[in-house]
Image (cartoon, rainbow, N blue to C red; front, side):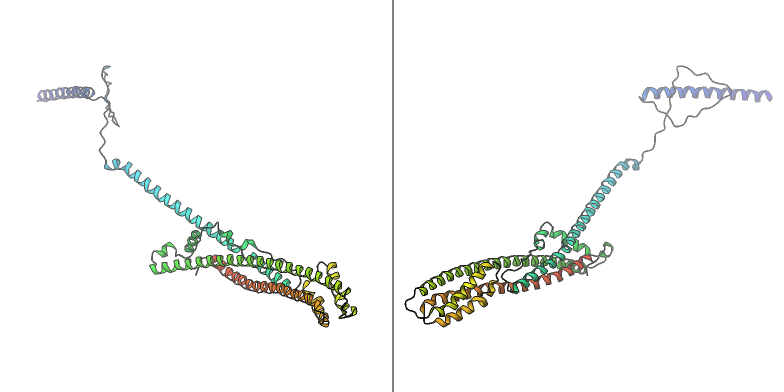
Length: 370
């Protein structure tokens, strides 16, 4: 029985060794076939090494082949580059839109700030213009022959706004009146349109204010030029008529001195001639003489003296020249009366513009225009 058991055990051992040897030969054969058929050598992540009690000899001609297991195909791996590209495009698009929004918002705020500064800097020039007109008006009303010059504040014309964009102003005002984006989502179209109309109203008010201010400046400039031209023309005519009167009186004096008719005595003519030559002497000695006093100092007394000599027809031409001087003096006064009326009207206009400017500036300083 023991012999039989030993015989069976021996046969089983031999069979196992033979199977292992056959398995190794088969593996070598398969590895050799893989090496021949595959141009690439593969490797596996881990190598299983069995250790025996005694080292096994390695055939120097044998080749060690490391086989890497084929990774399973993944749809996500193939889609990952496409997803990355699309994500980059989307992110780039939104970044570009954000940059445009930010740049536009910065531009609108900068433009609104410039409009605000330009409007605020108008306040002092308008006040100075009103003061200058008042001083000029006062000097003309004194009826002095000379008068204070009128300062024209060129900084209050519309040229300073020519470099500013009207559309930027409207965008700025619309930005101030519109609801925040989280509120605008739930606002009705009517409310949004109402806020837009508020911005448009303020914009039109500002542009209307600028147009009126420019019109007032042009009107002031034109009236000042007209006054200068009118005073120059009437003064020139007055001086020419004075020269004519001087020639006529010298001729009249010569005729009377050589008169044979003796209508009046020389003593009766003397008051008139003394009056005239005293006036001319004083006028020549005082270049700053106020010609508005010529009526009191010479014209009225001269006409009174000539009224005593009505029988002598030779005085008629002299009396006519004196009457012309009355007309010249009235023309000068008319020019001054006319400019005084215009200056009064312009003071009123500029005062209204100043009040309107204060209200506009208040609107700009408000966080939200109401």
